[in-house]
Length: 186
Image (cartoon, rainbow, N blue to C red):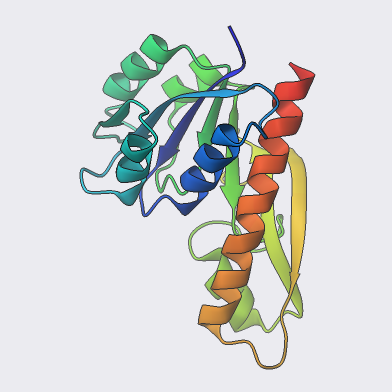
């Protein structure tokens, strides 16, 4: 059995799609995506999972109702849980069970611009360089140990929309790279 991965997301799922494509192209160092989970019924991430013939499930999630998500994760038995656009705060039960096995992709160069709208925060601050970060998840919001980062230069002709596109492109490369490294090291 290989390095088993579950992807959690709340939105359109472009990062999940990048991982699914990388798995299909055998660029994840033997890692296997065993499931895709979303807290939103109509999330694009579920469509991507289904398109790649992965078990893709909607499970309502909240800090006070974590059990359905935890039960599903137990069934999949992942070695790594990837939060890729999962717009929920992970609760204590979740952290206690999966601590040291959860990574998050955040759209800024942490520790700058934690929380929601990292790209917008960087844009409004007028920084010349921003980017994305993959980090281990702990109880502090976007505060876990940084695994890797990818810088993105903010050019004079950038708009918020063009910056978002550049950061999303960097996220796809960074996340695949980190997952491949973690799988190879397992």
